[in-house]
Image (tube, rainbow, N blue to C red; front, top):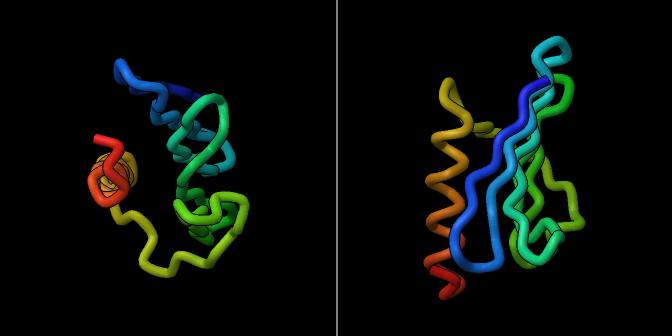
Length: 86
């Protein structure tokens, strides 16, 4: 199991959980200890927790490709800019 966090001076951070044996990937954007956006992979299926409703699980067919953390960080930047959080 590997876990990392990237934080800023504001109230949000990105957490990355990688299950090395299981292949699980969890990439949430956290604000005030709550997920506000995220993309996860469980049993080869990707799902999205949309910014507007982060409690939802929506099938995310494109996945995040061969560099999932880099792809997720790019999506986080877009979400932050679109919602005036950056």
